[in-house]
Image (cartoon, rainbow, N blue to C red; front, side, top):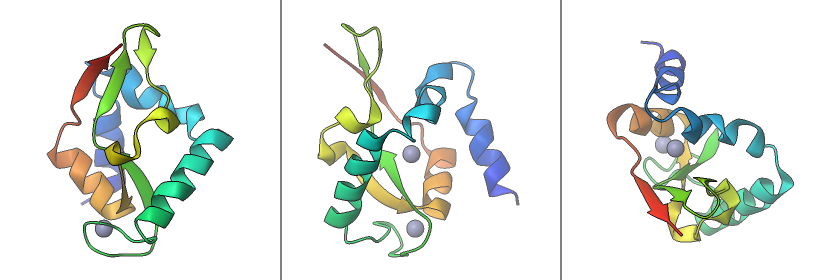
Length: 106
Ligand SMILES: [Zn+2]
Ligand SMILES: [Zn+2]
């Protein structure tokens, strides 16, 4: 079983090409780093699913598409309630099993 491959396969989902694609470079943005640190601290640096403290990532529970921007909301602009800490393994599993809902906002 090759989880990495499957995960990347999901990311290239053809009907939502820009969801993860647009996040690629944004994830190196210092504003995302700061938001990420806040979520990690809130979640006590543990995966909320299995409790692991390794390879932690931040998952967006919803993606927000802004009508006024005509683009996806930047990852650091989400309310903290939409962001959760998951380890890499739970995160990729989650993306394989569930489609992240996209919500249109102003
Ligand atoms: Zn986990
Ligand atoms: Zn995710």
